[in-house]
Length: 138
Image 1 (cartoon, rainbow, N blue to C red):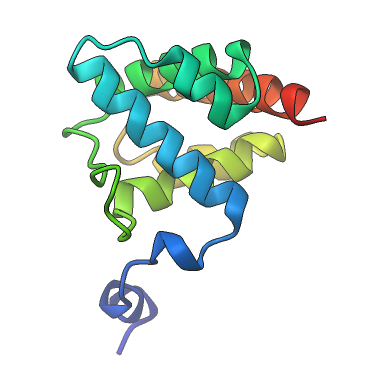
Image 2 (image 1 turned 180 degrees about the vertical axis):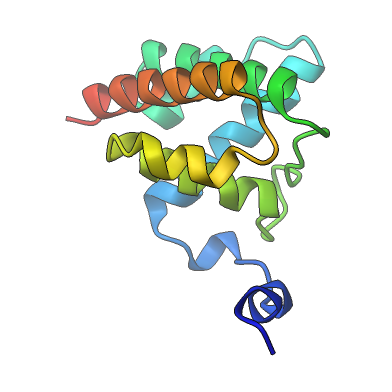
């Protein structure tokens, strides 16, 4: 069986088994998306989860950017759901690449589904969020 097919057969990760920082980011992202869709101001809850208002603002911007740039609706789990979606897994990978300033890997990961301009915006928003989040975690 091919490597890609084997990966497709693996179960999706459970948020409870992930490193705390990754679980915190997924839950914060879910909260941001739900708030945007329902026109709810969750900035204070996000600031508490992410360590500051700037990080909260940056994750809201990132959620909006992904919502506009993604070729299909970005699939997130409900805030209480323990299963991580494939899109959330991809988001974590993209965050790691942005944190490592690895633009070529990010482009390779997303080039087949997102155009050049959208990738540029997403990577910039990822980097801006990482900078704000790292700056608040001291």
